[in-house]
Image (cartoon, rainbow, N blue to C red; front, side, top):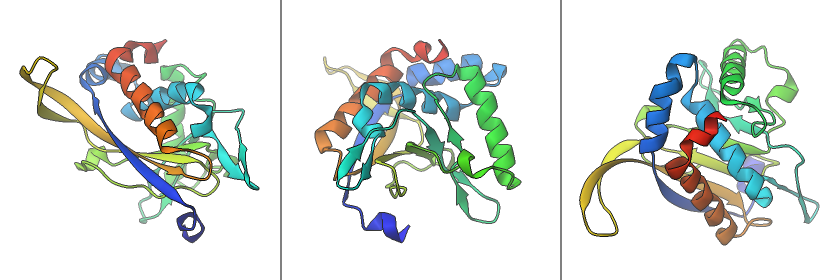
Length: 207
């Protein structure tokens, strides 16, 4: 953690409408799908379009990763933290991803993970939404270029482009990125595409 704090980082926050994602989750949750898997899949598919956000800093250069491995922060019963990795998350279907995630969580809490199951992440997801958190900053893991902090999805009164008021469910996401390899505009473009996927094409996460 101390080494991570020496890295020059920046934060970008984005608000995402989650009505379509929440509806999809209600539809496929009975089939064993988790919200974590849906978020990881959405992130992985967006990272395919933004490889620099999936990259890391290496010897004064950008090291591009050949895999998209989404690590997810999990709180341990003793108060610690571990980040099980969903390897090649962009290539797995949502049902396999959910089964893999549940297995990783169970084995992480019983301290049965192998080192490559928690140390090979190329991008990290930290979700505190289930605790009612609106927004937070996450510390960049060592050896990665970005981490995404996800807040809770809550109903909000918002106005559309025509000025009409309505209630929509929204969540705030906040990316922390390594400024040595990623620029603010690149992080913002990643968040914009992630929001577009979640808001307008959530059903594609099941394909």
